[in-house]
Amino acid sequence: MKFADFMCEKSIRVELQAADKPSVIQELVAALVESGQVKEDDQAGIIEAIMKREELGSTGIGRGVAVPHTKHPSVENLIGTVGVSAAGVEFESLDGESVQLFFLLISPPDRPGDHLRALENISRQLRDDTFCRFLKQSKTAEDITQLLEEADNNQFAS
Image (tube, rainbow, N blue to C red; front, side, top):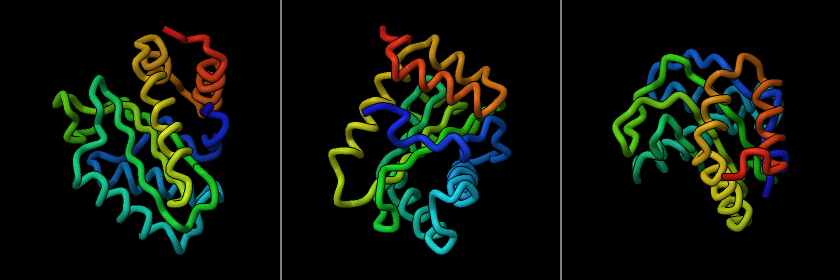
């Protein structure tokens, strides 16, 4: 599974305005609506599903990274986006640190294998400090898309 299989460049946000967990999730899902990946009618249900997942345990995995995700019947294929917050957001991360990098993922309920492979790919790539540092320094969605392509081509393989 590669980032190119599910990331939507038009929904990437390099300057998140959100200051808390619910706002980050709302902003990233709204970006998916604006880019045509999610129907506006499904927005509230998706946000609710992601917040329910967060109640089970924070998807803030540490080192300034969070991967909020859910399965939702409104999507036919795995979709995702990236958000960057220069200031960082309190996200109840495992290490107690604020989060600057967000990878939001939504998949259809009947495709759990795709969901797991995407999460596995994201977490593997995010273990690379150089990759994370470059993402945090990105100024445009194109910069992030290029980094994701480089990751897909194993240019950050540790």
